[in-house]
View 1 (cartoon, rainbow, N blue to C red):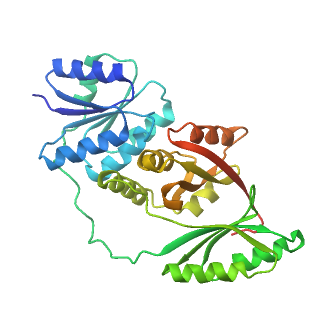
View 2 (view 1 turned 90 degrees about the horizontal axis):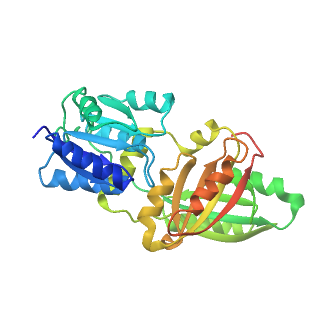
Length: 327
């Protein structure tokens, strides 16, 4: 056997053709329809002591795109040969893929012999050669966070209310928005009691009507997917506030009503959408709150449409951020 190949592609015909073709060429091949199933397959194989010698992944998939999978795979298995395949690539995508160590790029359509040549051109490696931890994990006490949405009952006091909230101790983020409410606040503390005190203080303010309060919850992800999300977030190493400031166009908060029974698939899909700057779970897994960026005319409406089309999403509401002061 020439090696074990894991294939990730959302098109059943391509998965079948690649699996059969590689088998005929002397490889053992397993195909997965999306990123989450591939994550499970890699971890299940590792626990059984089975190593993969190659990864072949498409870029555009329904849950996690191939470039993000590539980013995490290269953290976990730096020397694993990876071949990125796509029928909709451009030079920028190609250069992004090839910037990763021991990675190749192949445009669709191609013949099996082209695939084999591309795999053989990569240096040997496997998932048996996992990267070790750089340093002992630091034990960090987890803080408590919660969102508060507010309506201002006296428009004449809008700026005064905003400034007071913006400078209040415990308020991590305060944004004026245009939507079903006027201000959204993200507070952070050492305990739920501390958060409650902050919100009680806000509730006593003049011209303020509190419309909702929702604690941020840990998303209910299985171990493999949770670890994948954690590695990707650490690999990017960029706070959401910094990412928002770097993005062109406007930014908005979105509140997404979802089926809590499908939270893993929905959260993972939303988390890995490029235009989503961050994503939090609230209300017992029934809602997500996040921030999206719009990079041009009509671009933001397409993101909202994309969110609405995810299986298990019931409703998407938008609150556009109004920039009142410079951070």
